[in-house]
Length: 242
Image (cartoon, rainbow, N blue to C red):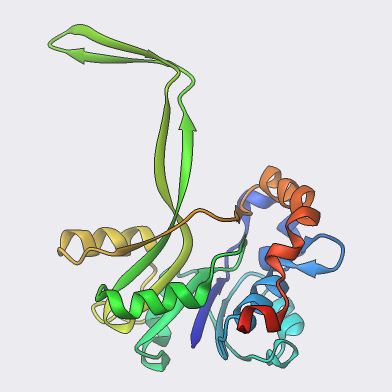
């Protein structure tokens, strides 16, 4: 099984932390970097090869990960010469990818079963599977229902339940075929293109641990919670394989 990890972002929202460290190498707990945890999880789930898309402070990621043998993985790199956003690096390497593969951001922590996601993607028939998490958003205003200039309903500070993308995907190579190498494009536009074409992605619904470490407060929260989540995020290799 093959995974592509997007690790080339500049981490602008996480400054000043990311001035000297790329976001995937930010420390979590006392002994681990985010990328260390992710690579260990992939190895535990049976993945054998990983492609790391790097740009910002890429040499530091190369120095930390090396060839991946520390995790029992074979790791290769694709280095952006210009920013290609979250989906663009895939267009450059599409001829080197297997028919089905995992794609994920390098700045998240989750106990999602990556192997189960990829296996489900392979049998669903969709070109793309999006791992989705349930989120609740509270509106801090009174919300009005208005029809023909009249207020016909009022809800004080309602909450909305919806599913959001976790930044983890099962993907088939056919999803990349229309796009030329070197094109800068995000996953948002890729999904919008697929919807316009009637190629609807599959949803892999997940309700476990998911920490998206994009902002300083989220990073601080991940560190506060790591002691209680360590056993979940770092399962024993033998236990997972069983």
